[in-house]
Image 1 (cartoon, helix red, strand yellow):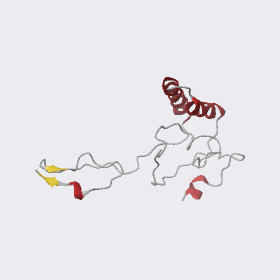
Image 2 (cartoon, helix red, strand yellow):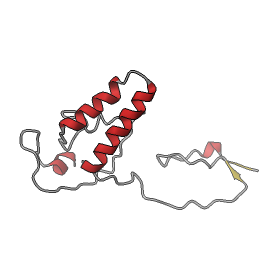
Image 3 (cartoon, rainbow, N blue to C red):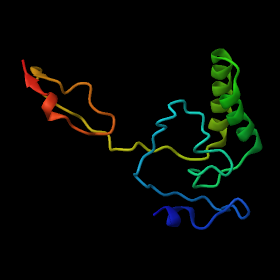
Image 4 (tube, rainbow, N blue to C red):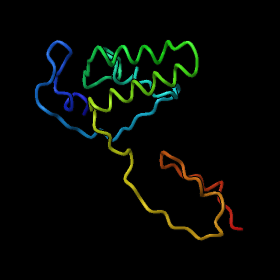
Length: 127
């Protein structure tokens, strides 16, 4: 699926037409919970399957990793996101279809629901 989606594009010979594919495999930033983009959008990153490459974006990513303190890191994250959102290197699609969950008000342990759609019936109780 990934090979088909990216069709042999590389940094040396980037894709010239718009391509879209829906892997439905999802992505998580774990264990790096700060969405700095280094794993996804840095030039040459292992998970950069679309071969997105932009020197300004790369510099912004480096700044998120090298900020001297938390305030500077937050500023770097905002600068990174504000630049990248205008680039649109990918179109986000939700990992799972949106759904509506209906349950009896006396069912405890269902809420909050797992973000990955996993159910935990051992946590349920009536009360």
